[in-house]
Image (cartoon, rainbow over all chains, first blue to last red; front, side, top):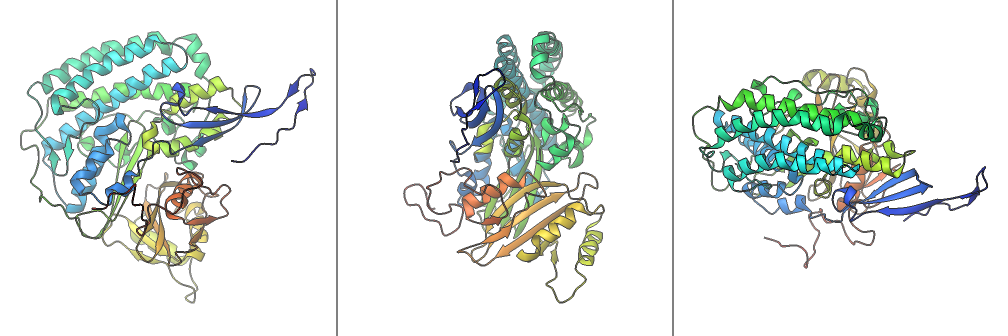
Length: 378
Length: 158
């Protein structure tokens, strides 16, 4: 570990000022998981942020090399667990594209509805935790109240509330529950009536705005340069929604707006995610009455062998662009699997935007970058 | 830009037939793949990023691969302006001291991703400002994602 030069200097007022290290995490509640940040600070002003990663690295990419294509779907739940359904979908789409397998329209529509519900569930959790991070505990309970309804829908659909494992190569593990459409249609008006509460509680709150406006500013050029994606990049005006540029499943059949902001600060990232929840509700509403009849899967061989070649699939999770890169040599196991996680790229710009701010600002910046550590430590 | 046009543009940067030419392939991949010699990598990457026709400003995936005999790195590039995608591949047969030139001066995102490749494959990147392990501890022996890596206590081999 490099050591900073610890030369004490005398400031104008005669007090001693010196730079020093402190550790934030790995068990700090505001680092959202086992992430350790090495902060070099002068007083409370941040001079350098260096993330120390790997506390929960499970080497999932290596594990994939000795598992079958059906099995590796399950491992992707454990990356960004708040986007588990979308991660599963990415692997399934990659395998299906490699096999040139066309899944039924019913599967595509259900996948997209569940994907958008996943996004809302992830954003409500983020919203609740963000409030808590900046000192407003009430939002935590509001966020979890609404997320609970989505988790109940997931539980009824596939038995799991978080790590869903509902997608399989070729379709869905089981058909949807008879109550699915009814419950989703109950959720849409419920959540539309609750989202304005979010605004009343937090968005317009002057203390919250002072904590986030102008804090952690990221320019569009830097967003592209650091490989940022998702709401982090879109809040800086970088149009990068994979759902728009590389639509998958039923996303080419729905109308929605890509949410962009130009301020690039923590408040802009906040506003993008709130607006995205409204958009996700619109997407679900367009599809929920039009789930086509048909099978919920197409048959695949019990042992799936992909043809020789490289296959890449990108999807938009709640955090940004998630990519699955499979190198196949034609056997039943992948030769190499790489998961392009949105979290690692988004975290890499933290030092760039946090330097010069206060530790309290770093907490707000971290919360609006919205990292999930297992997604970084794959 | 279409894949054919991309191919022509890249070839026009290598007019000298004496130097090794980039090799193109679309077989078994949905994107255009270009393989390049290690000593030409940085020059090609610089042109790909800075040429207004190609304008590959978004490095969205950087993957280390152990091909058995060779070690390699795969770069997935996209242009946020033209929305075309290109895959650049580079390989070396030197397993003892594999080294490529870093591209973190072109794309800041490569900084962490090259550290990850170094961590798991032992591939070094010259001109990298902070090339140390990203996930594993400093005293870890070996490079776990290499195919010849053995760890009897932590690995279940099927």
